[in-house]
Amino acid sequence: MESLNKFSLIAPCGMNCAICMHYLREKNKCPGCRGSDLNKPVTRVKCKIKTCEVFRDENNKFCSDCVDFPCEKLEHLNKRYKKKYNMSMIENLNYIKNFGMNNFSKHEKKKWTCSECGGTICVHKGCCFSCGKKY
Ligand SMILES: [Zn+2]
Figure 1 (cartoon, rainbow, N blue to C red):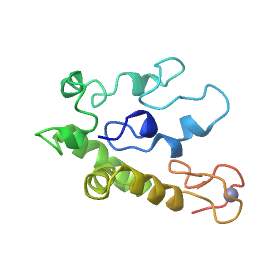
Figure 2: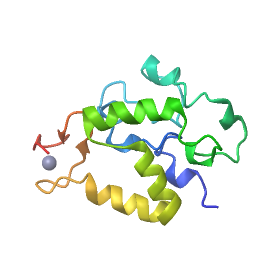
Figure 3: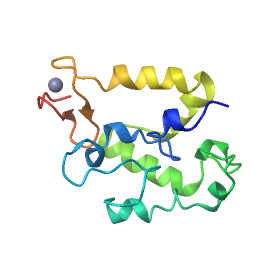
């Protein structure tokens, strides 16, 4: 098993925290779902997925490690993100399952790097966080 440290920006639900507006911003920057709860938006601290009992077992790192995957909670979140931001946590988790974390990281980096300036594209804003180019 690859160490969790290396991919600590990938939340248990499959969200890539590196492309989240709360992570990208300078002020009150969120350290990611797996980071400390300090400075985090309250909706994240109380996240039903992150606090799911399946993660009491440290061997379970992602929702895809759960027998109920994908459960109703994850389906709900996934549906919202697909509709609103054109991104799927379930697809992310399946990608990790099939191709491994290293390939997923490369894939994500390519997908979310701005072709204009090399900055990071924010999934919530739908544009580059550095230069503002729309995607
Ligand atoms: Zn840019």
